[in-house]
Length: 142
Image (tube, rainbow, N blue to C red):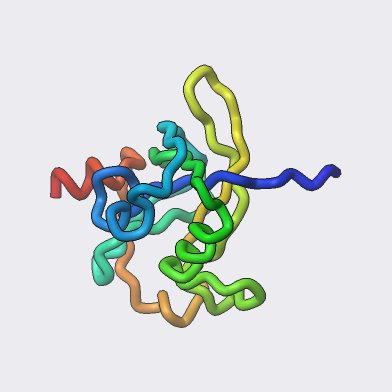
């Protein structure tokens, strides 16, 4: 199997355009942003105020982003998402590769941050299902 170089990130929560972490972490660094979806189940972490995605049969809405300086943005996002390579069992989120469906049915591989329900840090979380898979809409209607 060939090693596919991943150069995009799929964001589904506070990093989406117009959301609070977008301004802090991504403003001025995004080369391109395309609407897309991934397979998974989306939750609102009630006690933390942000979303979580785990593998599942649902559809999660978000944006596929390309950055001017991919590596430096990825380092910042790893920090934001409390992801440390080699500590997958302890991390709040783990960076994984996912298939993102965009318009016309095209599929593009990208990184995304998958919630880690087994981490001690997450053991007391109260997860509320977001049935339509759109966190931005969920927060706006809350």
